[in-house]
Image (cartoon, rainbow over all chains, first blue to last red; front, side):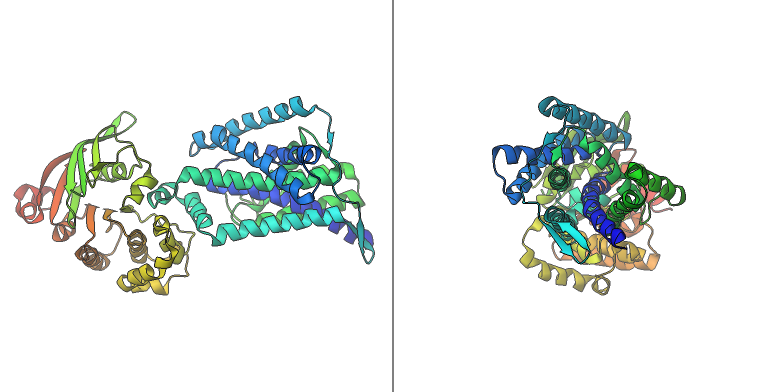
Length: 289
Length: 235
């Protein structure tokens, strides 16, 4: 029982990060009908941003977080300008291919800059563990969960309760009508990709710190799993994507704990196959492309 | 002149939709564009809004050229749109749709007063304000589409087929409301297939056929003309 609870707890930590990355994926897809294949690279940029900030600027956790998010945001705005805005509204495969190309360029650019081996992201916090009865949780894990929770709640508030969040939903449904009521759709595009990049960047920072490393191709598996979360959840509800992200993390942790960690990565894709066979539009809602 | 369109041409690829349309809307007037399906009525409206590109011609709003401007800027000058088929934000609530109508107006403090105003005109919307727009009836959706545009406090209202798909009784009421809105001083340019109704409330109308203006005049005269009766009013 203790192993079970411990693994659930560990799973929630990683799962919250999947959810944060998946939400950005989902946001850009639902608002702009663009499957942003460069999205995982925002995550990678966040981890390298953390590395750079720690190396050259500060070891303060908040500072590192801001630094990583800023690097991811910069990368995000470039991707929006070159591979999303010019092809927005076209057949879905066109932005898919454009963003894939930019994504691959970013991976190899990072490999060129930082080498193909992982770089060490030095710890910025003393490795303290807290015990909750039989369970133990590190401070870094708590910080990861805390950051993810804040980001998810902030996104939900933004989309539901703010003027620009409302405009974003309007653009998602009818870009022409939104424009005819004074919404600058290009600005919403920048805003949306920017927010998705900030979130993925923050996730990259926490994963970089948790694993104490960053590498050029770290976005691949992590990004693919977040993509799976979005597909399994469907893009209709923010909450749905959150729940699936957390569940995937827990499921993986349980497989690692009880079966073998080599099977861990197979879980996400296995679940995807099963869900898509029975619920091709995702568990909570549909994709209208 | 509030709105002046001259020599407007619009084409979708090689297919011309509008081939030299000219029209004017003076301040405070209510004018109609009549014509069959595919006559280029909607394309004219969309060109004014900057949603489709004008291939040739000029569009002036308050004596200022607006062709080539981005749609959101054209709206900010004071042109609001009631699109064909309502085109509400159907996943947003009635209230949120109205807030979107006032998006460009900026001042949140004036919102409640404006809301009261449109609720006086369309009391039904007040009852439905928390519902998502997609759940409204056809007539209510049309009210909301108009109310949303009024929230922008425009100088010119472009209405595309407001009567489309509505029951005759609802249409009657709707046209009365449009007249009332105009009587409060708002200029209106309306596209309609329902020529009989449109000529009743418009003071002046343009007849469009395959992308060209083939006739124009005060509604009274058009109503009396034999050819108009035959083509647009069904005998």
